[in-house]
Length: 121
Image (cartoon, rainbow, N blue to C red; front, side):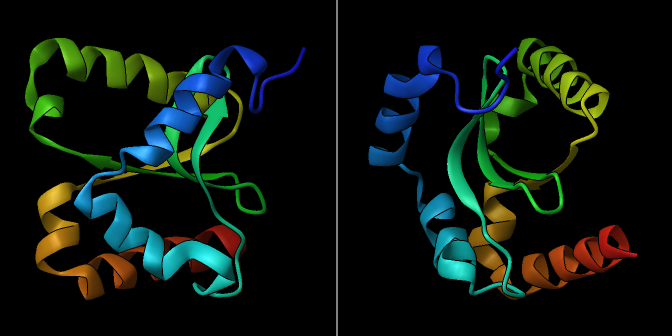
């Protein structure tokens, strides 16, 4: 069974890439083209029926950037179900608030570096 980048999510993935948030654009500048620790990241990547903000297949690492909508109870429940799905297929999900990325991208990158170093051990 195909799990990555299913055809059923293709149009949505394309549309999400066209309408990236400021925080997604900001982080993408640092992740794209193997700029971050020579790791290949993809944006708006399909995993199962879900679309994640950023994915590094080499590390099986998802990076999610959460806006205020993620504070609602319904969205938290959805995120929990989604994160469990990722965990069940051995993918680590790391979440940052949009505000963190906008206000202090260097701190976000330092946190990511620590996570990556731990995953590589």
